[in-house]
Image (tube, rainbow, N blue to C red; front, side, top):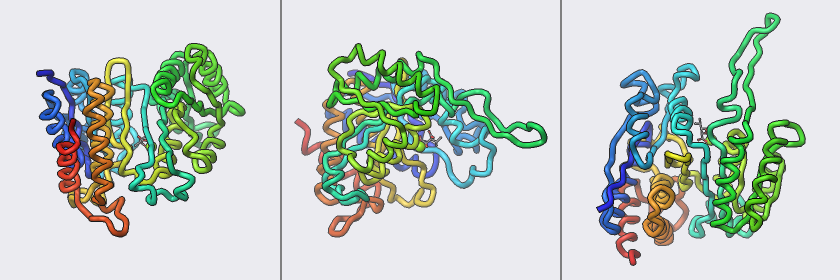
Length: 361
Ligand code: IPM
Ligand code: MG
């Protein structure tokens, strides 16, 4: 039997609940597809700060480095909000991305037909939307030096640095082209090259790489225009590739366009490691109540099965089971709509697992 090593970082808030739900789904995958998962838990975020003083303890990093993939819940909460940036739970997230060199963040956003009314846009505008934001994740304003608040002529000055080497741009752009080749072969590259030199370089590299992927149709958009087109014609996008900061913003927008943030999975991929986590946060207001929507994390596990383990069939089974569960009308409170059956974390997970059993080949 194949043994696949997964580092499990549950994190804070609803993290433990949604990860536990996902592990049950993986157990079912193991049973159906005869694979064995070797799970190792590590601390991250606020919980890690409480126990070790560090949002990303060395031991956790070690577990991640030795695993085939990392499954993460969520980090952060009001308890740690007053800490300085350097010691906040979010820093654990930023460090793990950098340490594992997870440079490509894949955030698919598609409309689930049973949830089409959850979108703030009219159904005829949003119908058929299925896009993938590929966000660069280890460079840009998030990591550029110099950074900080300094004193200059008796005045405080805040500085962050937008910085990319051509190689950093190239590797993520190439990933995006490869992904576009497996989808509808359309790539939108987003920048601000009418103002920023970094963006000028970004655009040049996209043009260079495009020669290696002649079948892919390429469009360049300025980020402000892209933000607008995303609500005006969301279904026209296939793959969107962009820098860290722009991608942070646009992926939230993509999330709201298709309905619920509680449904959005993500994969952060490097050449040696990969991490899978929901796009949403730790939702401390509903933590421990058993009502959190585990679907984004379950779908993140399905991305893991596809991207890290080549188990496309298993990934597809999970996605179909989720869709079927929604079609049957089961909803956690965040996606509740009239006439549907309101259920909690455990029950929706059980329904998904039942549907996996029913739909398996
Ligand atoms: C995200 C989040 C993080 C980011 C925060 C929590 C540091 O917004 O994953 O999109 O900005 O990358
Ligand atoms: Mg964000």
